[in-house]
Each structure stands twice: as C-alpha cells, then as structure tokens.
Image (tube, rainbow, N blue to C red; front, side, top):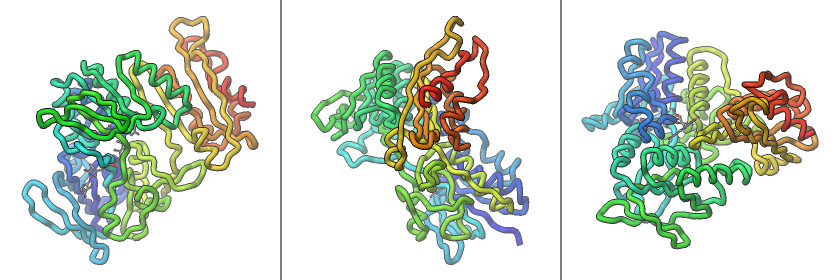
Length: 446
Ligand code: FAD
C-alpha cells in the first residue's frame, strides 16, 4: 500500500520536501495544502514586485499547480487551509476556503511547512485600511495597488525587508519615513555600519527615526493618515507598512501537542523529525541549530527553508541526510549599498561566552590604480584566545557578498584568523587588490 504524505504549506520548505521525497520514492502519494492562492513563490522578490522592477506576480512563481501535478506527480490544492492535526488517527482536517467545504486527509507522513507570519504589534489603528504587512503574494498585490496613489509612506521596522521597501518605494516616487524602535538599523551590524546604511538612506531622501517606537496609527477619512511614535512625533502617511519581525506559524503544531522551542518554533532533530515520528517540520516554522554555538535558534531565511525542506524530503524518501545548521548568513541591497553578514556579531559572541574581538578595515575592491574601484568595509569577529573566526559583517559594492561567502566557508570549517590570513585568494587588478580585504582584516586581527 503506497504511503500517503500530506504537506501543509506550498512554498519554499513544503515544496522542497514534497519534490525531493517524490523524486526518491515515486510510490509516495503526496498532497500539498496551501491556504493562499499561490504556491512556489519567492517572497524574497516581493519588494521588487511592489517597486515595479518585477511586473507580474506570476514572475515570482517557480512552479504552477499544474506543473507540480503533471511534471512531478504531486497533488497541490491552493485556497485550502489545514485547520487541525489529529495525531492519534493520523489525519488532518482541511477547509476549502472558496467553497467552505471540509475534508479529511489521512497520512502516514505529515510535513508541517507553515512558515512564519508577520508580528502584529498591539497598537491602535493596526486594522485601518492602507496599513499593511508584506509576506505573501496577496500582500504584495495589495501593497502594490496602493503605491500609485501614495505620496508619503511610513515604514515601521529597520530590518532588511523595511530597508528593501524603502528603496523600492522611493524609486516609485513615494516619500518614505522609516521608524525603528532600536538605536540602529540592522542591529546585528556594528554601530558604524548601521550609520552608513542610514547615511545611504538619507542621501536618497528617506527620513529615518531611530529609538522611535510606534504608539498608534491615526486614520484620516477611514484610511491610514499618520503615525505617532511613543515620544509624540507625528508623521503624515497615506500608507503604512509594518515589518517588525515574524513569528513561526505554529498554532496547528501547538494544538496537536508537538514540542515547541525558541519563539514557539517546532523542535526538530537534524533530520527534521518532530517529537512525533510521523511528523516532519521544516522552514520558518521550525527551530534550527546554530553552527558555531550549537544552540537552538530561529533565523527565518529562504535559503534555510529550502534546505530544511530538502533534508526532510530526502529522509522521507529513504536517504540518510541531515541539516548542518545555520550561520544566519544574509545579504541585502539598499540603493547602491550592499550589506552582508554571517555568524556572530560582537555582542552575540560575547553573550555566547567568547573572548570576542573585532577587526574593521576598509579597502578598495580592485587594485588601487585600477579605475572603478569601490571601498569594501569589512569587520571580522573572532575569539581572542583561540583565534577562531566567529562572524563577519561588511558593506560596500556588490563584491562584498562574495567576500562574506568566503568567510562563511572559513567559519564553517572552524578556521582561525591566522589560517584566514594564509588563504591563497585570487588577484587581478580589475577584480581584487593584491591583498584582498579579507586578508587585510585577518592580518590586522593577528
Ligand atoms: P513560507 O514562505 O512562510 O510559506 C509557508 C506557507 O504555508 C504559506 O504560503 C502559507 O500560506 C502556508 N500555510 C500556513 N499555514 C497553513 C495552513 N494551516 N494550511 C495551509 N497552508 C498554510 N530570505 C532570504 O533568504 N533572502 C531574502 O532576500 C529574503 N527576502 C525576503 C523578503 C520578504 C519581503 C519576505 C517576506 C521574506 C524574505 N525572506 C528572505 C524570507 C523567506 O521568504 C522565508 O524564509 C521563506 O519564505 C520561508 O519559507 P517557508 O516555506 O518556511 O515559509
């Protein structure tokens, strides 16, 4: 009798798990339930869809429902929400959101890939029209629909989604004011790096308020009209976008009695198995392990979701596979500034008990005499006692991403700054200086 596999959630993690499992075991009968109207979409592209760089939402979609069915043999139901998990009888209850009809889907294997949902701060005015969040394609369509008649937007939250939106809305002709509750943007960066990000925003006409917690959103003619911060500052806005973090979408898992961990994410082992051996969880709804500290973390990223899904699918399909953990590697672009980071920040390294030190350098990304070089500023965080590399953050030209990626490899391999200093990196004047910024940062740390 073929095994029945039910997947809850049809994007990065869920479809990675389904596709990999089916490839390894053609006999699996796989059904995916997705409550939104889209599957297989890259939420990461949403800011660029909102800004107009990407025209149609379909361009964000890798596979259609039909392709999943016809090419991969996986049955996908959009507008179907799983309402509950019955672990004892191994079945889920699902509602067709278009017709209201209920159905029961039995499983031998269940994969929970419900992702995360935006944090909705408990403030007055959060439900007013033109106050939006950006997570799903539908959110993107709603937000994009507002852009053409928006003059002033307030973005709440200075994380990478808020910053990408600041760029995109500015380029679409909207005046943007950004509120950040903390004392800096992208708080995992050194203070001076955050300042550089802020200067870049200033230079492009974005107004930034730091230490500015939102108290309420005021309406005007029934739609968003202004935002007021705790200190009483009021800024007019005909559009408000909140990007103040996400939390794992684990209400179903909680109700089913599965073990939950950090931020209520689902506890999984290295094979993505939950506390119930018939249930796997992957992606933003699940807990991860930090490669350096070995401690559980919840760092919700698309790269991780895809990989966790693939591991779940491999194991379900009968292969030995495990997830190596995360460093929280990220990259983003704010106007002409690229920012990338991996591993521990100085503060995180200190909190984790390391004799944490840092080495900051600025160096051109090409030979000094070669035209067109741009500065790369790089900070490496290391343990002063053992010399072990623990983290890196950088900003500058696009090439900063490649440099951080090199350091990802170094951290994963457990290298010391002395070993990084000895790396035989590439050099040619149009591509890099003879001593790459990585080598300069490492040698300064010795
Ligand atoms: P999700 O993408 O959240 O998908 C979960 C799906 O499950 C959803 O479609 C949801 O509708 C469905 N679902 C939930 N509950 C149910 C239910 N009960 N029944 C049926 N269906 C259900 N990451 C990067 O690495 N790089 C980036 O540049 C980047 N940029 C981003 C930009 C934006 C604007 C956003 C919002 C995110 C970005 N991310 C980025 C994060 C990345 O998109 C997520 O980490 C990734 O989408 C997580 O995938 P997932 O499959 O775990 O969850």
